[in-house]
Amino acid sequence: MSTATLTSKGQITIPAAVRTALGIDAGDRVEFIEIAPGHFELVAATQSVKALKRLIRKPAKPVSIADMNAAIVRQGAKAKLSDSITTSWCAMSRRTIPPSRQRRRG
Image (cartoon, rainbow, N blue to C red; front, side, top):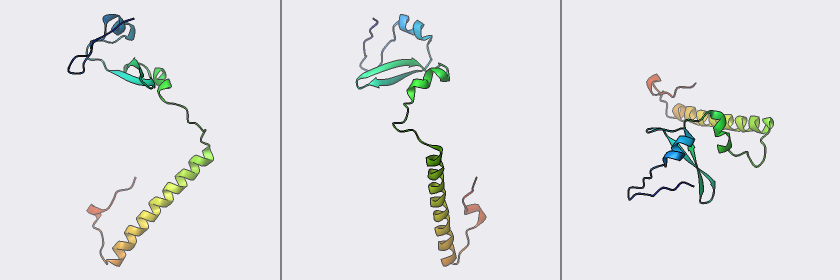
């Protein structure tokens, strides 16, 4: 088991055996992943995407395609409502918004 001491600046030196096992050198980045309250895993940030798979937990309840489509429709309706309110306000104020001040879509 390797140990390290925390300095007054909040820094530690990762023991050589751990650096070798992780395949990291000076200047490489590492991530601290909380695996349980008070327990962290040190992972080299240079690993492949496949090695990071365990970082994202599965949702408690799977989301169906129908649920995703419904969420998209709800958000689209909110955006349309927001746009119509802006258009109505501009019409009521009898002003036009110069093209340079209009929101760009896309």
